[in-house]
Length: 301
Image (cartoon, rainbow, N blue to C red; front, side):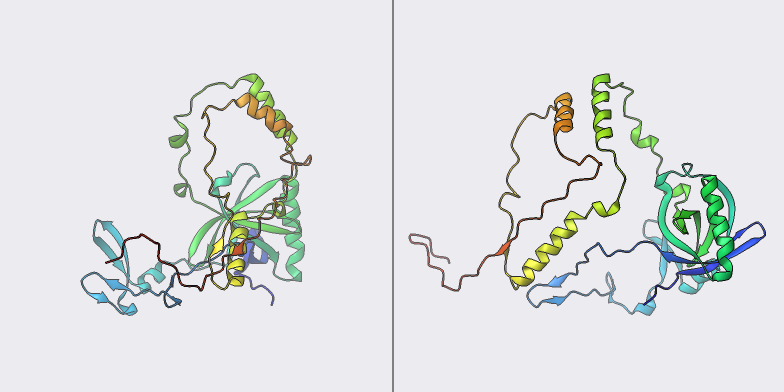
């Protein structure tokens, strides 16, 4: 089944309008979702809307409220909220162009693929794409979508364009409040040279497929083992919870950097080493024999 565009409209550059479609560039397939389950019955837990002192209430009695002070709310119903939602103008006006490095990475939020809506739009689309690439610029504008207005950045991406929604300035914490306590100490030149050599040794081209979510992989393996064990307890690696060896908290930075340079922790092209598969786990058989009472033990009341 072909993907459906989440937005159809046009990109406008001065007097030129280019019909385009937007598609989500990301997916949440890597994450694992859990539900809360009542263990004795094996049934999923559900929740009721409850008001303290009143009990369960009907969903049609619920409105949205904005807390202006502790316990005091301005109440808004859905019709009032809908009235202030921005109507999608179906037009993205590119009002500014900036160098690709001008937008800090912390402002980028969510990416979307942009493609021409039809064959007639393709020529103008390609002109805009190649002009942005040649100038090494990013187009900036505002787009109304799903009842809200977003600041967006538009840049070339392969044969198409990539549109990324940006955070507004008041959504980003200022770094100075976090970094002000860091001193102005200058690093030792020998340490700096060693660190630079290590960085150079591990430099390579980024390939997202080289990295895997090891936590999700481990969870999938545990779930598979639990399925094979039919719900029985699964024995984990006995060394996983072993206490770490105690030692000094003082780190010889020079020795650690030298060891890192000599350690074969990464390949020459800067790619991470492939992780070894986790050891297979086994189900602990449940004993059906009755337990013997310990001799000499106290009787339970």
